[in-house]
Length: 219
Image (cartoon, rainbow, N blue to C red; front, side):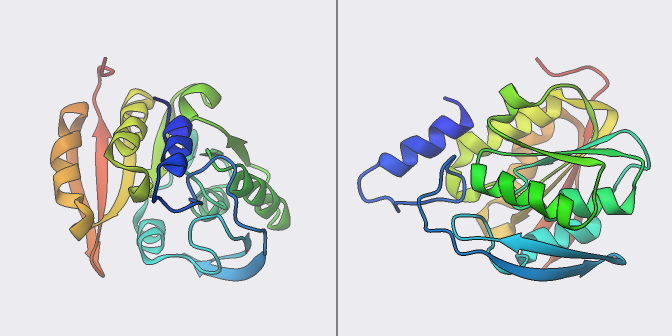
């Protein structure tokens, strides 16, 4: 099952919430708001909305990942599950010579990410809606991701499997997850796909994991 199909299937289950930030077309009524993100010497004016992850402010996990993630000085970076674009746009501002690709199944989030790029004068980033396995091709020197916990383990592992197969040799995957949501288990489970997986930071109940690509692509 594709990640976007999983999202839609979960929406239809009896007793499940009627709307999710990982749905392709969130049903929540639009009500946009703006906040200013200042991090690593960069200031971004970001639009957010209902039906998109972390409306109105940057969540603690993404903030920690934004502080810790390595941004290559050249090449390509993928913001996997970009939401309204804080990680990808920050990376694009930090290193203007790289090409940033932001992707999310949530079409409202991708529209916001695209508009936020324009609002902040970011020209080295593009936002794409859809299943990453169908919408994005090529390899990346770095991939950053705050995985959608509520989408379930299968959806998260599908994203990580894609990342493992699309990193350049010695490329890095940066992840953030709450410890009590299974960050230590995730570190163990993804180890076979990478040369090494380390914990780069622990703060406020969150862990940032960094995984180094293997020379040979996983099959």
